[in-house]
Length: 243
Image 1: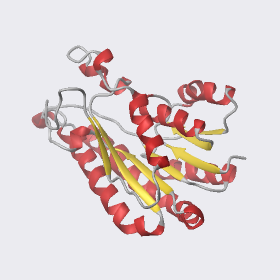
Image 2 (image 1 turned 90 degrees about the vertical axis):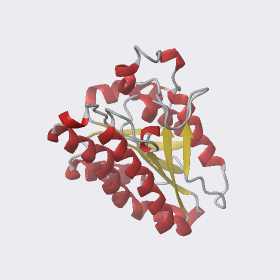
Image 3 (image 1 turned 60 degrees about the horizontal axis):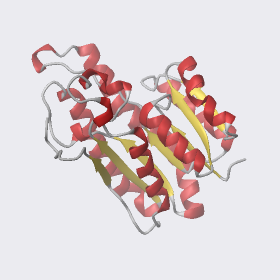
Image 4 (image 1 turned 135 degrees about the vertical axis):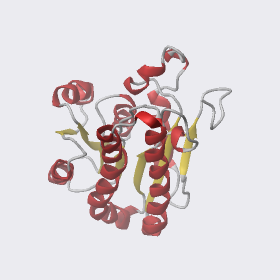
C-alpha cells in the first residue's frame, strides 16, 4: 500500500484528473470522486493500468451524506490522508437580474459548502499525517474570478472569492499543526467548464490542466517551513481583473 494518500473531488476530468496524475506519479494512493460513475471510471482507467492505487467513489458533493461516504471509503482503503484536494466546482453564468435561485444554490452548495464540509471531514486524518511528518496539505481550487468580480459570473466569482478567504482562514487555524492550505486561482483553463468562452478564447490559447497540476507538485516539494497561500495563473499579457 502507498505510504501516503490523497483524496480529490471533481476528479473525472480537467484540473482534478491532472492533479490526480501528478499525485500518482509522486507515489500517492488516490481516492477520486465525481458525480457520474461511468465518466469517473473511464477517466481513471489509465491510472489503474499504470499500476497506481486508485479508489473511486461516485458522489454528489452537495449532499452531505454522499460527501461523508467519500471519506469513509478513503479511510477504509488507505487509513491515512496526507493531501486533500477540494476541486469540485460548477459555474453558471447569468446577468444579475436573471439569476435563478436553483443555480445560485447549486453553486453555493458545490463550490463553497462542500469544500467547507470536506475540510471538516478530512481534518482528523490530516492532523494525524501532520503529526507524523508536518507536511499535510489542503489544496482548494478557486479561480481568478474570485480575485476580481466579473459580469455574468457574479455568483461563481463570489463563491471562489469565498474559497480564497476560507483557505486563508484554514491556514491560520491549522497551519501551525503542519497542515498547509493553498488556493489555486487560474484564469481560463482548457476544460469542459470553459467551453462557453472558446469562441472568444481558443482552447489552444488557454492554460493547460497540467499547468495547474504541476503547481501542486511544487507544493509537495517545498519544505514545511514554506507556506504558499495562493497561486494565481494568468495567460500571457493578461492581468487580474481583465475580462
